Image (tube, rainbow over all chains, first blue to last red; front, top):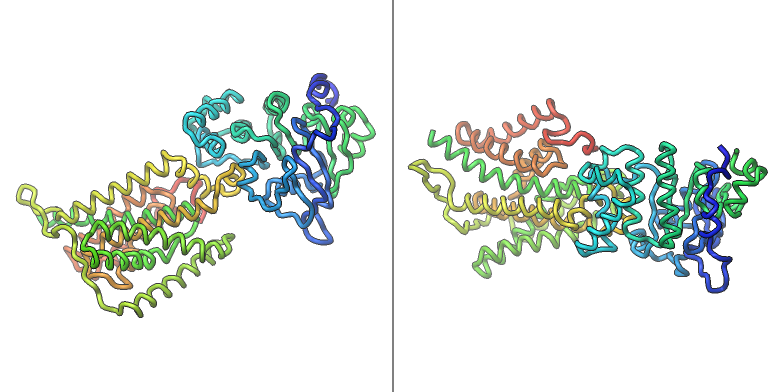
Length: 262
Length: 292
C-alpha cells in the first residue's frame, strides 16, 4: 500500500494552518526537553512546536521515545530539563489532573478504558470536569455516542466486555467529550482492523479540522498517521531527526526508506 | 424454638454492626487498595471522643455525629500524614505502618484512660420486645438495624449513583487514567479514607453499649469478625460484606447461646477456613477484580 494513495487532497490543502506568523502562538511547545537518566536520556534536548488545529504525526521505531515524550507532556513523567508550554504557559508546576483540566488530553497506549465501569460511566468520567452540571454532561455523553455508533448500542456494557476496536473508540470519545484543545494519542491503531483504524482517523481529522483541536499522534502505523497529518515528525534516540510536511514525507522514497522503513 | 428466634434475631442485629465495619474495610480497599489494620483502633479513638461528648451533653445524637466527624477527620489525618508517605507499589509497607499505628493508638489510649472498661448506656432499652409472645429484638437492636440499613443504602447510592462515587470507583481501579481525565485522585483517596473511618467509628459506637464498655481494645474482636467477613465476601464486594456480616453475626450468636462464648471465635475461624478452601477469592469476588 502506498502512502500517497487514498490521501484526501483536502486534508493538507485546506486543513493546514497558514505559516506561523508572530501572532500564531503554538498550542503546544516543547523546549529543550530531556527525560531519563543522565548519560542515557530517553528524550534528549527535544524541541517541537505544534500549531493550533494542526495534526502532527509522531513517528519512529520502538524505543525512539514517543511514549515517553507523550507521558512527559501530560505530566506522568517528570523531565530532567526543558519546558512544556500549553498556549504559552509553562506547565512545570501543573499536576497531571490540572493539565487535563486545562485542555491537554491524553489517550494512553493500550486498554485505557476503565474496564470496571460501563461505557456510559467511562464517557461521563471523561466529561465530568468540563461539565459539572448534569444536563450538559448528558449532552456531552450523547456527542460521544454520535462520534462512534457502536458505543451507543453498548452503553450499559462494562468495559471488559468490549472488543479492542470498541475500547479504542471509547477511549477516543471519552477524551473528545471534554472538548480538549490539545490531544495526545499513543498508538491508537495498535492491533486494530484497518476498517476501525480508518474510522478512528476520520473522527480525529474531523475534530481537528472542525473544532480546531490540536493533535499529536504517535503511531507505528505510518501510512494511517500520515494520511490525516499535516506534518510528520520522526524521532530517533529521543531527538527530532526529520520535521516535514506529511505529504512530503509520504511522497519522498528516500526519507521513507531512511527513517520509516518502507 | 423461642430461644432460637431470639438468638437468630439478636445475631442479625449484631451481624449488621459487623457488616458495617466490614463495609468500612471494603470502602478503604476499593479506594486505596489497602487492608487497614488500624481501622479498629482509629474507630475506638473516635468513640472516646463520642463518649466525652455524650458525657458532656447527655445527647446520644451529638455523640453519634461526633463519632462520624472524628472518624472522618482521623481518616484524613492518617492518610495525609502517614499513608501518603508510604510507598504504594506493594501493599506490605502500608500494612506494616497500619499495624504500627494500632500499637501507638492503643498505647496512648491506655496511658490516657487506663485499662478499665467505661460503660456506655444505650439510648434505647435492651430488653427484647415480644412478637406474639416470642422475645425477638430489643429497641436498641432495632435502632442498630435501622442505622445500619440507612448507611448501607446511603453508601450504595453514593458509590453507584453520584459523580463522586464514579470518581471514587475510577480512582481506585485506574488511578493513572483517572488523573488523565482530570479526576483529583489524591483527593479521592483521602475521601475514601474519611468515609471508611467514619463508618467504622459508627459501627464501634453502636456496638460498645451492648458490650463490656469502652476500652482501648473494645473493637479488637469486631475487627477480627469484620475482617473475616470482608475476606469471605471478597474485599471488593459491599453485598458480600453485608451478607457475610449477618451470617457471622448469627453464627456467633448461635454458638454463644447453645455452646459457649469461648467457642464463638473458633466457629468464626472454622467458617473462614472452609470458605477459603472452597472459594479462595471470597464468595462474592468478581472474576477479574481480585488481585491481592
